[in-house]
Image (cartoon, rainbow, N blue to C red):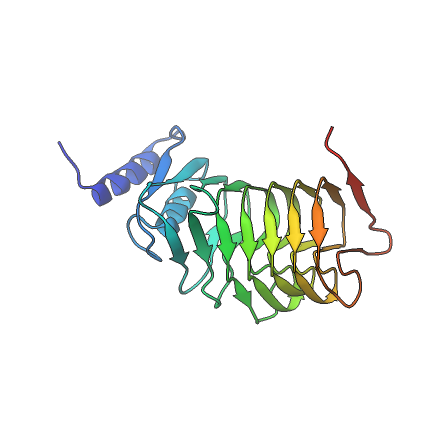
Length: 243
């Protein structure tokens, strides 16, 4: 029997939910740049959450340009792997109206995307990515023009555990930590920070927990205090080179 694509996705979800044991991990395919509905990134995220997590979200080679999120961020509440086609190929945008990713649980890996135009003006944090009570790894991503008005973390605000690798942060803005606010254990390696702005502390990074930076470039970031990197008293930043 042949199933239409939408029906097949529903069938797979129904089958997994009905089984007493977890299904093998699936590749969930994004095949358009729509905000929602079949084939969208939002739908794949929702399907992964419904399946209990542990699946990988991948993209058709026809998915290029920008996915503009309307009506809310993407919530990653369980184990999730998102493998983007490359930061120069695909942007996930908050459309200057909301956060892009809200990571609330599990082990989450995000790679190969541009995360841009997240905007928060409601007192919340992390316009690009907020990570709370989760383990987050970000690699080979580009963060640009994410703005958190009056609060922390223009691009990323971490209150969990985060590892950020081989990524670039440019022109992100916040009240504290123009690019990254560190509120939980964070490793940052081989990253570049350029022209990020904090209206208070830490133009690139504000460390209020444990931050370790390796082989990073920090240039032309601005803040009232700590134009590049600021560490609270008792929260020093560790710098080093990868061995």
